[in-house]
Image 1 (cartoon, one colour):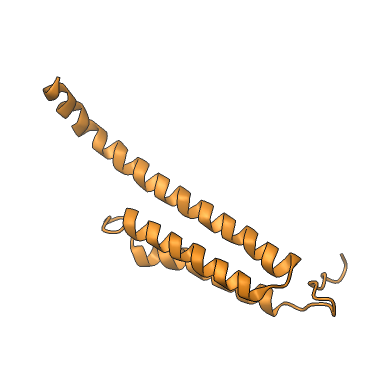
Image 2 (image 1 turned 45 degrees about the horizontal axis):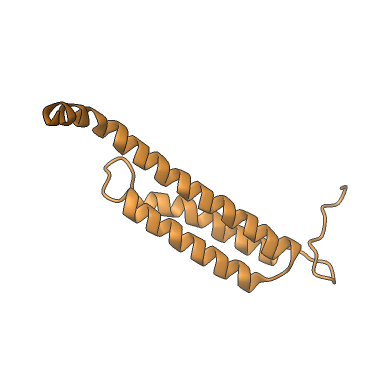
Length: 114
């Protein structure tokens, strides 16, 4: 039984590595979507820029940790590339929503023609 298990385990390694990378990227995308939702909640519905920045820093810190722990050292994925692809859009969204034109009561101005 041990010999059979070792033979089968050798065939599972590629599938196991693929599953780990997919799970890591799935968790990262889930963190990104939660972050976008909370940005909308903090900066569009209620105007709390400090809360938005704290939430973004915390969730991006978790995403960076997941990336470093799971994908670091793999030749196909650069850790810096993954970090920049995940971090920059979130920071740009924070800045854009914080600097957007607002009405006197703090709501975002709607586009002309809507």
